[in-house]
Amino acid sequence: MKNSFFRIGIYFFLAIIFGIIAFYVFAPMNKEDETVYLYIDDNDTPDSLFNKIGEHCHEYGATAVMTLSRHFNDDLTLRPGRYAISPSANAFMLFRDLRNGKQSPLNLVISEVRTRDKLADIIAPHLMMSKEQLLRYLNNNDSLAFLGTGIDTCTVIALFMPYTYEVYWTISPRQLLKKMQENHKVFWNDERKAKAKALGLTPIEVQTLASIVDEETNYQPEKPTVAGMYYNRLKTDMPLQADPTVKFALQNFTLKRIYNNMLLYPSPYNTYYNTGLPPGPIRIASVAGIDAVLNLHHHDFLYMCAKDDLSGSHVFAITYPEHLQNAAKYTAALNARGIK
Image (cartoon, rainbow, N blue to C red):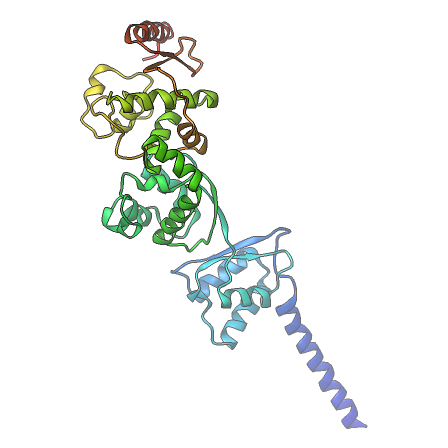
């Protein structure tokens, strides 16, 4: 009889132990009512990992994850990444994801920025890479050589189409650039490439022209007309004389007016100083801008000027005297408002 009670006591004790273990390992560990994310980087240690898990999860869950790690002799810090912890996640589920390196991808939004430096500013904070690591690629032709001919520090920004991309937090600069190039190839389908060829332009030349069009006007219906005007200038070897290229050359995007002394600034991006297209886009071109170039309006306009109502739209002219009249009205409007 004593042995029976003893065995029952042992079983009861073991049941309690297993119940506690089961609770630690399988009970929901997330403190929040929504999915949170655990970021493990190259500098993490077991202690820092425990603290990071504890920021989002109950201590019993963090303890269980680290206990499982020790039991399986598995250093989870060797698998950097971004890991999702859902409201129903338990220690076993998180341990399994960490052990298998099952990261949760994130949405990386690429917007229509003007410079490589600004591009790095909007990308790096969302990824494990630093801004400096990304710029070492974007600003170095040798680092870009793996992308093939036609891609250099002037043209690499053309690969970054304004989309939302699904990427892993641990993606390297090289992997990111390769992903951008692959997406760029998808965007430039046979139809778009055929239209570019009909204009006598390469895809990157189309994007370069589109970047100027985008800078010239935000009024979408006007973009094909603006594109047609610049295309007319290209065909006749007339300088594009696009004010946004002067701003880009000077790296001063706050300018409200362009003065004559600025037109002589010796930069390959200054289309008053040089004929033809600049060596690369002056911003990430919008899809609307690219399609405006590919479907540009064929007309005889060679000149454009902002309207004197300062609405942001333009008036177009075929002859230079007509253009001078339009320009005088615009200058008078600026002077009347004290815009310098």
